[in-house]
Length: 388
Ligand SMILES: Cc1cc2nc3c(=O)[nH]c(=O)nc-3n(C[C@H](O)[C@H](O)[C@H](O)COP(=O)(O)OP(=O)(O)OC[C@H]3O[C@@H](n4cnc5c(N)ncnc54)[C@H](O)[C@@H]3O)c2cc1C
Image (tube, rainbow, N blue to C red; front, side, top):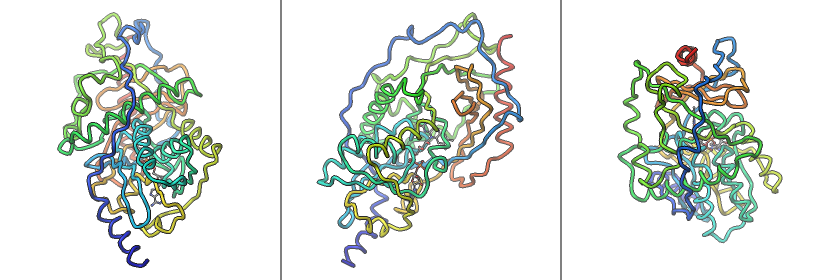
């Protein structure tokens, strides 16, 4: 018994470093509609954002759980436990949540267990737990923290399945297959959630190219969209460059494209309520070492601890990429989002969110006043750029 436990710990620490690729899920992919369906005439102008420091109602810094070799979705046998990992989604965790949870559930289906312990109560833990419940599993979530402390609560909440997901040099054909399956399943699931309490919405996005626009060279080391999607995968119409008469901004180069946003607080509350209503149990527990997992009564474990896997499983491929957000008082009349010079705003139900930064290996979660000032200046510039 002692030997088995020691073996468990050793494997948990060192096997955690292996490249993790899940088995592809079998999902149908619905191609996007034609351009003409999506674009509305905005020549009459857009409602402006009221920008001022006095309207700032909250700020946050979240740590994206980035894994250099991409999210780990795989089954690992440790002692007498089967652990299905589902972590390391970088800046794409919301977007890929249903997809990698489906792949994780498919892996759990290969075990004889009907009771599962899910560790973690962020978007990945909740989506995995709900997916398992829908397949008839008894699920208990064990977690250190819940909303609003989790990283998932500090996200922008847009459809961004390739954002800070994997370093280019680590893309493999197997990873691409896993990613594409996860992406298609997630996209289709989000469309089925449309209309339910506005947890998921479609919205027009304006990308304004300014003379001072600069590309972040750091972004070049992360995989780009065209490296991960196949040429026939097109979830949205191509961004349309606006002609002068349909362009609400003074800048010459403005691209418009529809996108999906997630209203995070109500979305997470709905998932948690649904989980409890379906008979799920939630327990607060911090796992410090793999032995703590070994001590659980369940034989099948879904590890959805995000950045927590760095310490818990010794996964040195993980690193935080911090992102600061600031929120202005909500303006219900705003029905579009926009970005310029690396700053964006998105009108969510819980406030108008401003953001755009990403600092690698930064563990500091105290909001920086200078970053907020830069966001406020950026959105002021966008508003000054609007036609009168
Ligand atoms: C600023 C910012 C903007 C973002 N924007 C987007 C976006 O627009 N679109 C998108 O798709 N994604 C976005 N992301 C990424 C997304 O938020 C993450 O990928 C996602 O939240 C990861 O979810 P998770 O459940 O794995 O992690 P978390 O939300 O961190 O949840 C991990 C859970 O595990 C628990 N846990 C950890 N360690 C332990 C332990 N040892 N014992 C017990 N419990 C433990 C935690 O308490 C928590 O409940 C953004 C992230 C940030 C920071």
